[in-house]
Length: 255
Ligand code: PGA
View 1 (spheres, rainbow, N blue to C red):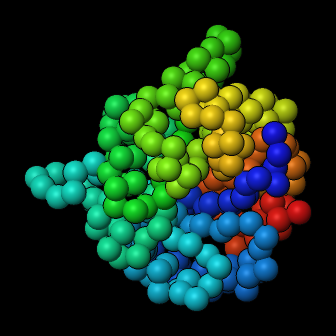
View 2: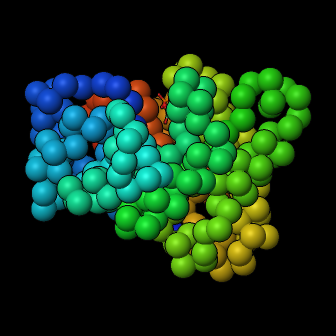
């Protein structure tokens, strides 16, 4: 596996944090700190901050993403936002299948797959999240769970479309808990996901795929995690809400 074949991307996942003023201030503080990044930089923000983030990042190296999108282009889906609505605003990325969506909002592998197709059709770049629960890791079925989530999410996705997808391996037990997977654990599962992609498509496609790690990645552990051969950057929750920490992670991934 050759790391030089693909691009590391550090994406912030703000979750349900920051009002408009706070978003403006955080982006203003962050931009000068990350302008020399040698990796992709994305911030995925609440819908209400998309306009602000797009405006504030104009002309910079920071791309903007949403945290979910619906599978239909429009219609009677109260409270939902379509991929087309996001694309029309100028949003480039969208997080899909995050474990919090699966856990609290009934998201399934089936709906993740439908949302993924809608995002791709609209021209968005999905950041597809997969990851096992603690009891699944303890039960020794991490590969089964992550492999199944990956295969079901990618059902019907062409090789050409896959080039626009990032996969984020996020062990659920490591999200927001301060418990990070060890660099070896992260690399092992990221590598496994790459073999799943290779079986579904081919080696060249798998080698070119950006596969991130997410789950309590921070300024202190980012360097070791992102140095792993199969870890191509990260999806960052808590630490993306502090400009200095986020910048340190980007610096680590740029090495
Ligand atoms: P965390 O969140 O970095 O706060 O653990 C990661 C994520 O949920 O994407």
